[in-house]
Image 1: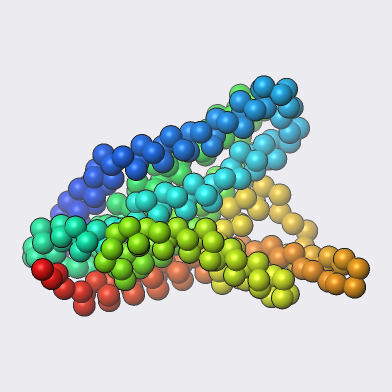
Image 2: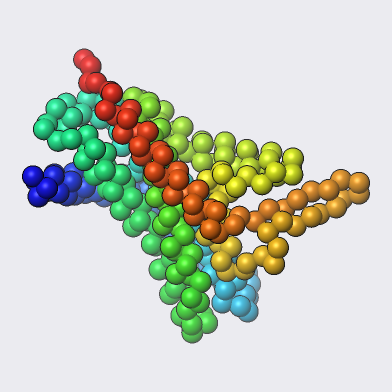
Length: 267
């Protein structure tokens, strides 16, 4: 029985993963990611802009678009991973088979994470190559940054799958995922910071630890006075941020499973 369940899981992961690799959106993401990596080097070479003296600063600058890459990738790979089954009626093939919906959800979750991982690795590999060529060394912090990026990516996939299970229209679920991560959460973070509250529970704020490892702040909360007004600059706590990301992953996946179990395919 366990072997049969495992085989079902592997089959779903393989099918969904290969489907993602064949889609036009994968190649579009690949092109966008490569452009994000290459364009800064072209500009640097064209205008004779020197590279930073410190390898850590180079690594941080090279990866400063990593969150945008992850948001785009997760929106494309996970944003409609459940909703498309109902929107395009492909669920008639998958959902009516004797496969538990827990296995279906887990398989889709893993396939989306693996697909996003391919895109995620491109800027990190590029950064490592750049460090070796330009500085002759690899900073250890880049591996810690990658670990944090993977945890963040998994939590984003969980949130995207939750939205995808809530909405039956695949286009709307992709748009909702992207707008939530690109606009809604950052705006909420900004509002909270302006009111002197740390947005520690907001996922996109927690993602700051991905780049923060290269240049850790001396203080997590910095007070800035402008005339009679006091502003605060917050830096996410690593342990808290990791716990928040894991919490998002567990809660969103469980909620998505509950919703998926109650959904029915209708003509």
